[in-house]
Length: 183
Image (cartoon, rainbow, N blue to C red):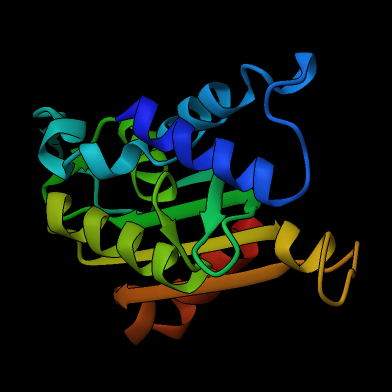
């Protein structure tokens, strides 16, 4: 698979008017292919594999919040990165999720080509699915290189998306507590 992707990168480099055989570019197609495979590793992962049984019984019923989970993803429209952070909260209902699993879930979905709006929803629905929580809230703040490096070229722009499920959608006070805690 790496060789096939590398051949396509070689053709792209050549089509742009560069010599893929010159010293600095000789190994670039293979390096780019490996990078693209790494950046899209989420396609080869499943939620069950990521969680690996790390859901535990707990009497905790107050909000659990994990803030500032860094993320790197590729915009499906231009294949350029968007970089940011994700905040996740949930209202446990007898079960809690191992702390590192939040970052692993974010990484699994972020390492797929997509738009930020869908990424936010995928993460929220995954947390809800594995915990059966009374509510889940996810906010992602990121900067998109497709907007910064090309097109309108706005360097200071950022995008924020949110998904509120269950108690975070239905209860304004719970939603406000979450939003206050992440600001």
